[in-house]
Every structure is written in C-alpha cells, then in structure tokens.
Length: 250
Image (cartoon, rainbow, N blue to C red; front, side, top):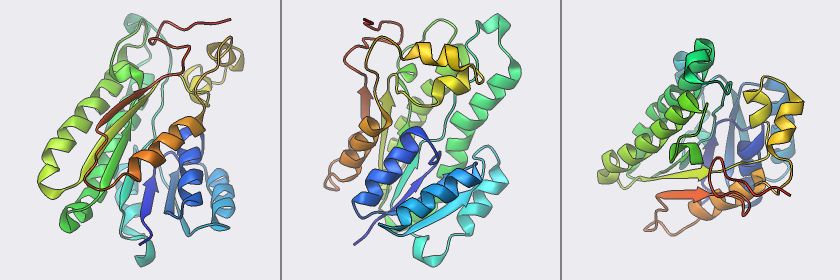
C-alpha cells in the first residue's frame, strides 16, 4: 500500500530533498510551504513520478494550518507520515541585544508551528492506531552555543516535545522520532543573517558540510523501517564537525 507523507517546509533544503527521495520511492507527497512559485515548480516536478498535493500556508498561522489540512481531498486525507521540517533561525546576537521580532519568529515557527500541524494530524493517526511523526531538530537541541540563546531554546523545545509525544502517543502505536542535523548547506544561514550572502557563505567554507540529500536519505531510511522499529533520536554531523562550535576547516 502506498503511504502518504506530509512535509512542512517543503520548498527548500531538507524538506525539498526529502520530498524528492520519498517521491522516488513511491510515497504520495503532500507539499507544504509559504512560497507559491516554489511549491508549484516542485509539484510539477514530482507529479511526473508520484501523486502530489500542495498546500500553501504558514505554520505560524493556526487558522490557516487547520483550514489547509481540512481541505485535503480524500485521496490525500490519510496521512501516514508527518515530517515537521519547517523551521528557521533569525539573528545571531547575544541575549541582551536580541531582536524580539526574531525571537517571536523562531518561537512561532520552530515550536508553535510544529505543535499546530501535529495537533491537526495526530487525531487521525490516533484513530487508526498507526502513524509516524518525525521532528527535525538540530544539534542546537543538544547543546547551547554563544549567541544561539533563543534558537537553541526552540530546538531544545523540539527535543522535549519529541520525547513527550513519544510517551503520550505510545498507547496508540504511533512512532515518534527526532533527527538533529549539524551544519547543513541550505538557505539556513542566509535567513539567519537576513540575506547577507557573504556572511552566510563563510559558515560553510573550508570543510564539507552536510547536504540536504544526506538528511533526506536518513529520513527515508527511518520511515522505511519495519513498523516494530522506531528510531527515536538521531544526531547527525559532518565528519569535520565535532560540536556546534568545533569544525575542522582547511
């Protein structure tokens, strides 16, 4: 039976790479994102190999989340796999200099957005006593680094929520796991530095960082395990990275 995967933040980076690899392996895909043109382009690309449905909404908007998920056609209404991938870092300032708008954005997307989407989808999984939720965290969920303050706090929250979900949903045989990547070469740093490409490029210079496809490959492995196997918590870094602040650069 073909399974349906619901992917937030599907228009770039890890989300986009995951949508592609799952589509190539015969999963039906629900693409979720804010950027209409990117959604349409990826929808067109993946429609050549699998069934695809797109939902344009912002995970920060609770009403939009529920309306989008309620609008799913019958062919996509049974969600087997939820990949809570949408997330962002905004700014890299010490706590005393932080921009409260940046704080709000990170808390709203990384924590509340994950909760809204999960809340909307969990009931059907609970009813079927079947489903798989994967939350994309970060090495920032496992340690704190200078100037990472609120971003690290939101990813620590993702880690805690993943553990809490796993406990609460255990009676319903719903698998819950978290994948915590280190430095992945995506638009992440460009967003963090608010479009300053020079700063963003420096983050990945002098070593071979993880690529979105590396994490997507791991996600595919995790979701394709026999149902009695749940990979609960996984930290992934490039060989050059030993911690958030220790990277061997040439």
